[in-house]
Image (cartoon, rainbow, N blue to C red; front, side):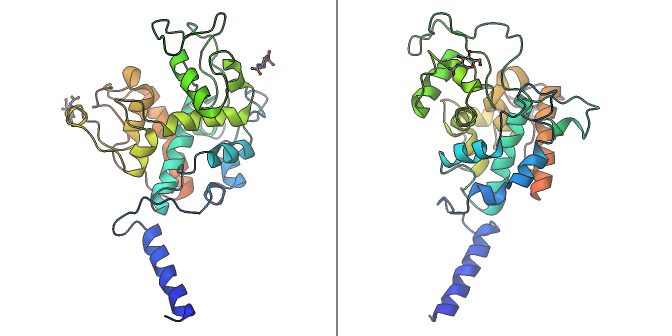
Length: 274
Ligand SMILES: *[C@@H]1O[C@H](CO)[C@@H](O)[C@H](O)[C@H]1NC(C)=O
Ligand SMILES: *[C@@H]1O[C@H](CO)[C@@H](O)[C@H](O)[C@H]1NC(C)=O
């Protein structure tokens, strides 16, 4: 081939690939997250995160999200363009619900208020599972929700810290003090399979293979299954649950802004939790 025809050919392949035709390769693309989520789009998603009303004012800058994303090279870079956008939208929607400051009649609607909180207000417990001997709680430390995914419990702080290079059991506060680490804990949760649950990433990029038990429990791939992974024990199997609908509301807004459809199985109303 001449170089111009081979360029044309590569272009053609790239277009097919990005449109999701044919067999999807699992190779990650080299299109950086920052070209799909620009600073301008990020600021449009999180219109109110830096309002004085938000306790996380100035805590979640765009650059911290990008830097943390780069630590997980498969995030938002796997599959075709639609898949990549949908995964990022799903992640940003779930962390928005976890940190929302919105209410039904809020300015710009309830789904413009993600990333308003960085730490759980009035935790009901210290979130120490003392039966867990692998990740023992450190005296005096508490493991309530912190950061974009509201990381909770010693058995999550311990392994997250180990994977990311901080002492999650002795210094859990760092998740609400350092925004890059905060975003990394959310992405760690997103990318990491915790059996019997698949990772949220695998579900959103189509790598999830349901077991027989999953099929019997209606745990089929889609945004609803991600909700099930995050908080299914409390929210799934309940038709019309308001928390599930709030998660969906963010996802619908973000996918619309990214110009992709949401995919199937938005809710987990008829799924059993893990
Ligand atoms: C986090 O910030 C709080 C309040 O500013 C401070 O007391 C604490 O020592 C910090 N913790 C870490 C681990 O950085
Ligand atoms: C699976 O979904 C169907 C409705 O689509 C429902 O009737 C059934 O009870 C669900 N099964 C479980 C285990 O929740």
